[in-house]
Length: 135
Image (cartoon, rainbow, N blue to C red; front, side):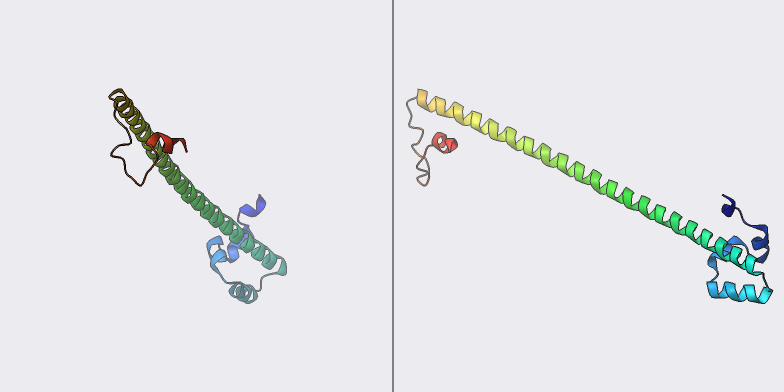
């Protein structure tokens, strides 16, 4: 947890914002120009690496969160689409059942009236609808 707080020695040389933004070659040049001790130079470089890693981790977390949010949005849209398809499918099933029911009523009526249910039928369908339905 110590490395999260700025070191007073390193802060006198360069503040955290500049330490993150400075190129390593520039930092080395600055260290050489100011005659900073080897120990302080190591601390500066470690501090720079710690700060950069923290920024990378934050960036990675934000990117991951954005990706998760995007995927959740896609999943929700797909669920809605699936529900619409299931609703449409159910309506089609109900319509087919209603047509079957109407057909059976008409067929029963035709039989009661001694009408040939296949008369007037399409010649390309030699089977009656009931025979076709059993296939």
